[in-house]
Length: 274
Image 1 (cartoon, rainbow, N blue to C red):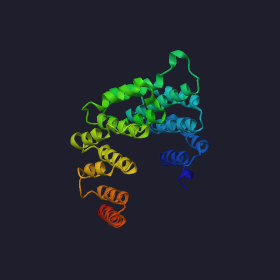
Image 2 (cartoon, rainbow, N blue to C red):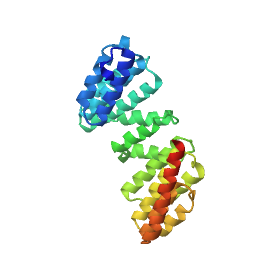
Image 3 (tube, rainbow, N blue to C red):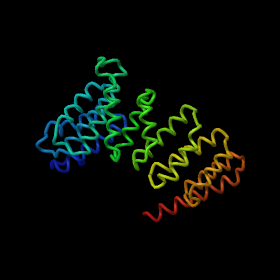
């Protein structure tokens, strides 16, 4: 019904929202159709809306495995100086992903190889407090860029640092890669650093839980219990992980009790927030 309204100030945000929903649902062609009107009428839309529309269109092309067209849109955006900073950051990350995709397809010349990876590494290096840092790490991970020695060495450098935002994300990525590669020797050190140095960071606890689950899966229960005892006892996720430990030990009764308690705590918290 919103799309039937003539007022552009109401219609265009609705088109953006609906196009994003179509992308999520796997309908890139419909997403492109919805934002085309915004892109073709820049005078009627704010730079923010036009930028978002272009980002959605570029993502739709990526979903269609057409990084060439995506990169054309994104490089054009980057050349503009009027884009809001957040939109510009997203365009730079999108361009890097498109460049990496083109390289994997063998569609770049020798001089252009590594451009996308360089763009992401530079973004992480120069903007350590950016809210888009997780996305930069995610792209490097999903494109398997950390298989390259240069990128992995940079990741190790960041993980050894003390930067309050970049270091926790680097440690989290190190832990994920070690688990994927079955190279677990440094996981206890990462667990401890996350707890001692970066416990207030949102990624820290999730990384500790990830390491614990790895210990459970590999029946390293004594080490897992030792690490579990270092976490806040009253946190619902910690209680849930205790249930996992009991389950791994074969004590299904205690596991059930822990799971029930964790879900009760989560329900209580949710009720208080509503």
